[in-house]
Length: 117
Length: 109
Figure 1 (cartoon, rainbow over the protein chains, first blue to last red):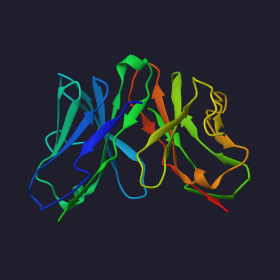
Figure 2 (figure 1 turned 120 degrees about the horizontal axis):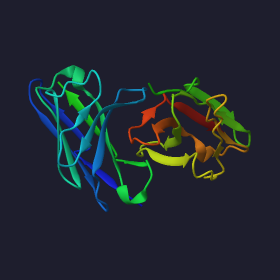
Figure 3 (figure 1 turned 45 degrees about the vertical axis):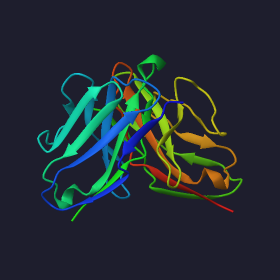
Figure 4 (figure 1 turned 180 degrees about the vertical axis):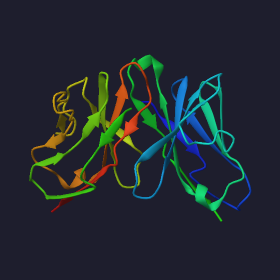
């Protein structure tokens, strides 16, 4: 089956620093990847849709200058949390679609736990 | 706007009992509905989708357009079914998923 990985699995950083999270599709090429945020005991909230070779589409209320997304290749999308603050602490999850499967199923990464001190 | 509602945050049943996890949606077009499951310390994974009309691990879900529901059912729950279940909706033409709040199912021995 399609496998999506994320790196790192957890990260702790100081307030004001930037953190980059990688999302990779390991055995398929993903023209579209998605970034979600999940707070404790809450559902996944879509942050943005990452399109290979073009700008990401951000959901309403998500600051594009705060959460920089780059989808430079068909197997890699990155999310950079710039000037992180404690309120950015959350679980960040990416997913990807396999366009060859011809459906809207998304394959999810294991998530990245970000803690901002 | 797309919206998915799972009215029960927590659901607890005994092993062998029937279980139903409720999901209601609102969407003006023709939706594609999914159930995703997240077992403890594992990633989110697809359980089933309405277009395939299949039964996975004994679970079934029928799309009821009149009631705008996509409830997940299993006649005899097992302990290994304990997990977080998310109902999700996508438009047939688009790819973004809208998730419900999730239901934590606990199957007691």
